[in-house]
Image (cartoon, one colour):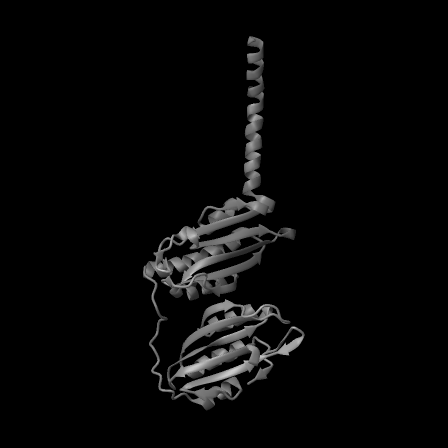
Length: 313
């Protein structure tokens, strides 16, 4: 009996280092799935990174800094107010990232500008709830590069931009900065027409320009009358106005359009699809800008140059 106990002790003595080594190797594998360094990603993002199924490294940030009610009910962040980003290694050593950031209305533009400044794409902007107070939107991002930590720095920049807005004012505001235009309807239609290159419709003081596009659905050609149209509407006066509208875009046009709008100081307020299918498949972007109407029109003109408009209407 003593010999058996002594043998077990010797066996444990020799196996213990091997068990510890195996455990450390397992931890290392989890820390660096497929060449991704989860710890480096976490450090770059300023949050803890975890490894999920399929060797995905994931980071997150719960929006518990602003109380939200949905349908009159106090809404817990765990039920859908989580910002996140996921990283996955690709062949030949590159890395992709995609994610979703919870944004209140006054955070959308700063978050989007931060994403663009760090080489990330914005792939959607929309709501996940209705009757949310304050209103909540979701900014979806994507990106591709050679270094997961560099991509994580971009995600951190987006989240830092959001936090900076809340640090300046803990309560989301309910309108864009700048004054509200006096709606006199006295807009120089001829000047806008010269810039945008087509005749507008004028109704109730609103000057609206439309540009049609085409697609094939159900083996039939459809166009602006079925909803595939880009348009811009100007409301206000000759000195100060609002422009709002919609851009119909193919996939390769989405990022150039958004960059051109932001370069013109025009806000992106939604990015989504309006229909399923079609050749080509169209995405739709809604926007809002304020300022001198001719300056706004030149901004819209710069964006129009990024899309293949077929038929000015």
